[in-house]
Amino acid sequence: MSDDALHDTTAPYRTRETHGEFEALADQIYRERVLRARRTPPEEKILAGQRLFESACEVTLLGIRNQFPEASEARCREILRERLAMRRRREATE
Image 1 (tube, rainbow, N blue to C red):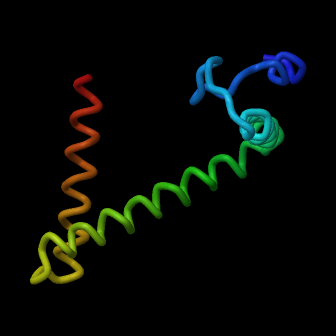
Image 2: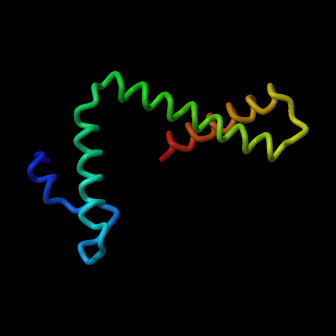
């Protein structure tokens, strides 16, 4: 989609029926985010993906520690690896 076409696009999380004083601002922010993403070099996108994955793993580890307070750090990381492996197997069968 060209930048001009993007200018006339409504943010996907809203319907055209949405009205309010923040409608134009929300659309402008959405467009700016899309344009910034388009300008981002591929290397930065890959690094951002890695950071997001690491952050998700940290959040998951917090949940595991909460679920198993008696588990050691090594055991928590083992549970995380098991969950990641389970997810990969599930994705492979889809």
